[in-house]
Length: 175
Image (cartoon, rainbow, N blue to C red; front, top):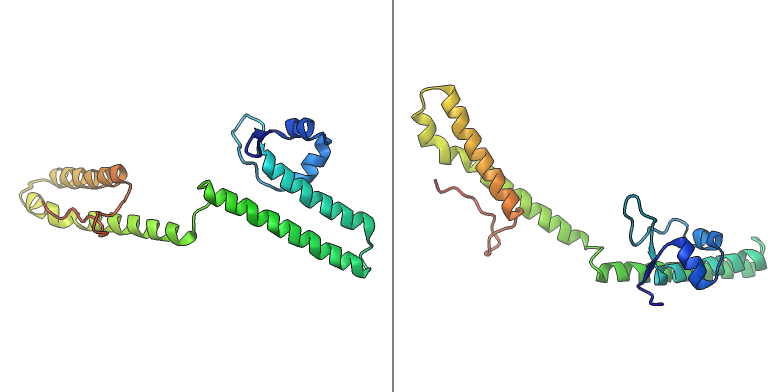
């Protein structure tokens, strides 16, 4: 049994020789490592073990101490520390697996896509000006503009809004 194996709560209960309700209580609001519509939620064995450890520490605190005792405060602090360490380890695992991405990377990617889209769309008037000037009807103008807007959007979709190799967004201003 590998810590990366995905299992349901019922399967984890059988493998770890625990009651299903204990597994459910320990997982609490821990998001599943795999959730597909129509299929049971699944967690990694390592995630379930970490949740069970947190749950055991919290239960031990509850069983041994009353809320007013000084040992209860210390045990509560130890439980919080164990819980925080488990969360940090879980976040590190998810980051290493590529599930979590630093926010500044997301911001940069969105900014690049928006800059590319802006440059592509702002290039349309210059690209169409000569052709539109020769049109005799508004239907011809609309057809030319629609063609260029669709061309710009299709290029964006195909490229995913990625910037050029030099880091600048493609302008597509050449007509």
